[in-house]
Amino acid sequence: MTDLSAYGALADRVARLGEEDDLTITASDFPDGLPEVQRFGRLILDTDYRRFIGSAGPGADRPFEILDRSQGFNAYIEAGPLRHLGLWLLHILFSGREWAGLDLTHPTSRVRWLYVQISSPEPYRSFLKTEGSQRYVSYAHWPRAVSRHAFADLAMAGTDRVAPEDRPLFALGWSKPDESWTLPIRDADQIIWDLTPEGLCALASLFFDMGHASFGLNEVNMEPPYLGFAATQPRSIEARFWLPGSMGFYCDRLDDLTLPPRR
Image (tube, rainbow, N blue to C red):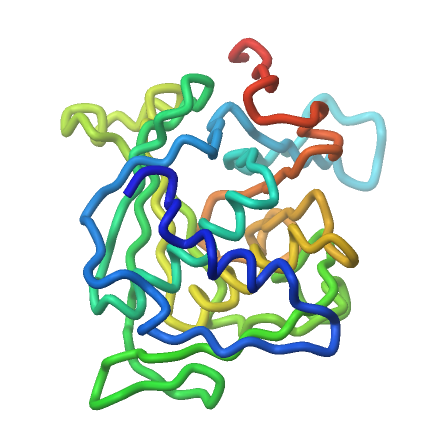
């Protein structure tokens, strides 16, 4: 399967949902089996992102400043492929796999591989149905408005999409074992998303809604709790997702996007 094209018909059903509609997505909606890693050319990931937070204390006459740095990544994608990406997340869950990956083939991407792993696969809520002890078989999705800080606390997000314990953990990875000891940020060629089953479904649902023609949003930020609005696990790096027309995705097509030189 190239570019997750097997999800096309199901993605069209998701795109047609109105505000009062819902859709139960089942394991039988997906092809049998799921490759360990498959090619996907419609996503650009850039690890050259950092946000600085500074404080000089209550006075302005001090010769020092306390600085914190939030490391993260920018993800650039169009609305249609974003729905495919959300469906791929559900396919991982329904397939019974504990992890799967995408080989990101777009030449502009600074990350080569995206991996998703499912942690603590214990079903415990009503919208995600199981069969047997740990076999997930369906997920009920209904469209909701998207806020910029979608997984933050309710006062900031406006919509309660995910419980704090199910917020995602995003991490950098290195395919060369010797680099994993020195952690050179500019050489990170993997992004890993560590998700609980509920967190995975919440992220898939967010991707469906983010690209919605009526109430979607072209920018979503997920910041760690100690250096931003809480939307991830504490050890997570920051994640920013951009659709065309946003401040970060300044053009109409992924293939027209260029990244600034590394800092």
